[in-house]
Image 1 (cartoon, one colour):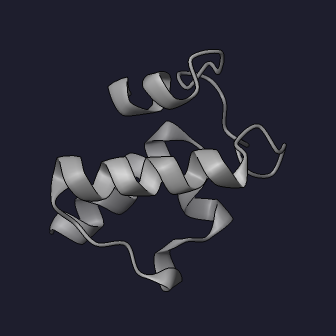
Image 2: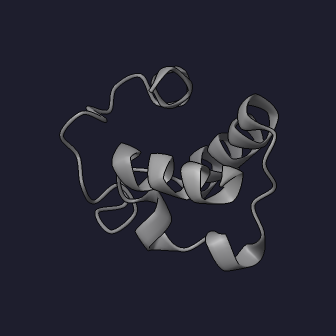
Length: 70
């Protein structure tokens, strides 16, 4: 959550479930999130993971991180 809030402080990540679908996150924001996730969690996101379903909510992002760490 901290990473997301730093990148997009005006977004309510607690409740928002359509970050990509509703165009709340820009492509630049998504790239920033990917970079921060790679650094913070020591995972590598492949192009296969960079799909709207994985970025539509904080929960979806967390699920993806857990899957990659798993």
